[in-house]
Image (cartoon, rainbow, N blue to C red):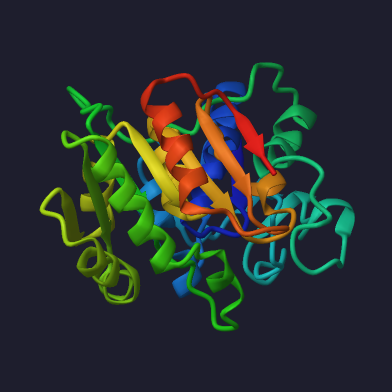
Length: 302
């Protein structure tokens, strides 16, 4: 059997697509599973993530007729049967739940992973939802290290820049963390644009040697994060990476409804809905303290 999977594949979407791919592999152990990944800046990081999921070809479809093509939610319509690929059966193709034309996230009633898994269930998969893990676990992980996730999602309209919590808030938060415990370290990494717009200004504002900033590749960022015990920051692709690695996650969601669609898929998280009011550095700091004490489990705060 030949199966083709396509959807919107930015970094976060790629991580959230892993459970579906794992479920398909368990249901069809001998199938060839190919994954369509776009080539726009919005798809950055998807290749690095999905290439780690065994048995999947990442890139263009092969010149064959696929038995099944799953255009798993969320899907932006960029690939068409008969034009970009050939398949006997095409499943899903929903841009948003129920083919909603509502802009944004208000049409989402369930998590992105739960929606995409509907395809696996309809094909006969009966197990639990698989996890999102894709990276080799570290030999040891420091409970004194926090990863600060401040990156922007890149899109031409600038819509997703609204996800950012603000450099001033991050400066106050990191200062509170260092004042609370002199043994804690904070790490942050990203590409050149992240470094210029977020990481460097916050580093200068904090001015602590225990705030370590790195401008590096995505794979290097994965390695840095994998050594930390807690992620704190925006709703970003790296937030989903952190959840997949088993870090405790403290995150703020600025867009209405995005906390439903995109909350971290993990057992330990505190998520703040910042679409209705401003979330303060003090609130985030208290959540980080809870997470470091290992008492926080999937709590949403409005």
